[in-house]
Length: 135
Image (tube, rainbow, N blue to C red):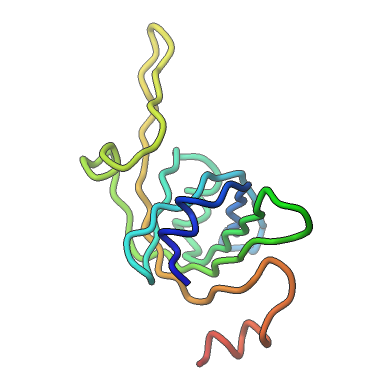
């Protein structure tokens, strides 16, 4: 599937799920990923719980539900490969401009890169996810 085309032309709602080193799970609303190539995506994030969890556990799942009747969309199973803070690349690819309130500084932003381990439909799967990961 052409992920760049899919995410550029498909409207929907996304959630990024992470867990900390103890397995405590978090889920947060996130915009569509920035597609770097067919196996690499990136998300821009503030230094909040999702970013904190990724410091100790590199695995995440991005669930995307299309704005369409029924349950259409996809799940991306991800592994963090690196991150950069307040980089030129981050500011060149972000979709929205953030403005700090008067007298406040804009909080740091992180561009977090992931490899795509597995892509599955929103509902159902072609097999067990753990079998798919092992090849």
